[in-house]
Length: 209
Ligand code: HEC
Ligand code: HEC
Image (cartoon, rainbow, N blue to C red; front, side, top):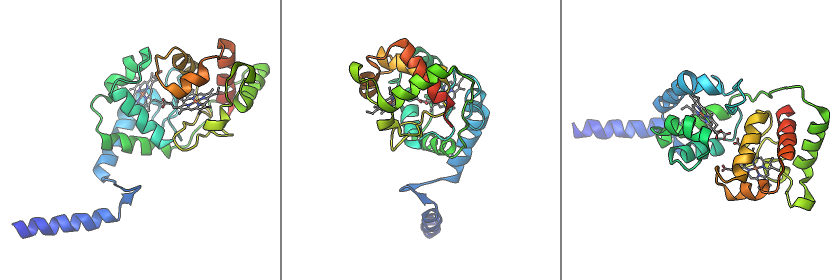
């Protein structure tokens, strides 16, 4: 009996060695479970492939996997706490295991991001681009591109913003400003932004592919 167990443990190791990804063993059952969740549960709001149609629900397709995983953990530990996070995502994430979170993040990261492609007023888009690329020096607002990348596709742990719903982006900027979503870096960035500046940069981001 013992020998059989040792043998199967050995076999399992060999099998898993082929599936080592980013230093982690990817269990096909966990991947399948995450996909079922993404399609059957999360998809109701975020879209089956992470391209949500409703502006209240952020688009997850093509988002940075490290960022996605960090956010799901922040909802689960009830740290990301603006009213929509509390109302929708605290419950959704409460019983997610770390391995499921990693697999969900991987699922969304490889989906094709689709821009929201809305017609918006040219003056706001132009002002938004200026803020995104140069910041507002007089008010001490840094260029967003420094962290989120020149194309807003995100870099390292910084999230992708391109093609995100403007309404969602605006609401997040306001939540960073009033610390309902308590993140020091983004609080510093959003601190001095006026409402119309938040709107401009959000509208600009929504137009990006
Ligand atoms: C009933 C609707 C609903 C369902 C179902 C739902 N979410 Fe959400 N989700 C939201 C809302 C609303 C937000 C935005 C919260 C906020 O404004 O802070 C959100 C935010 C998120 C974010 C943060 C995105 C970002 O850009 O920061 C992630 C990640 C996420 N959800 C993943 C999931 C996963 C994974 C599931 C399934 C296990 C799921 N959601 C199910 C409504 C939902
Ligand atoms: C110094 C780096 C830095 C700069 C500059 C910066 N950001 Fe961020 N931003 C971050 C980080 C880090 C996060 C992730 C916060 C978290 O962990 O919740 C973030 C998150 C965000 C989010 C939330 C995304 C989501 O899906 O919920 C928005 C929106 C955002 N930033 C917009 C902006 C805008 C607009 C600017 C320019 C006015 C800007 N950022 C400048 C670092 C930065």
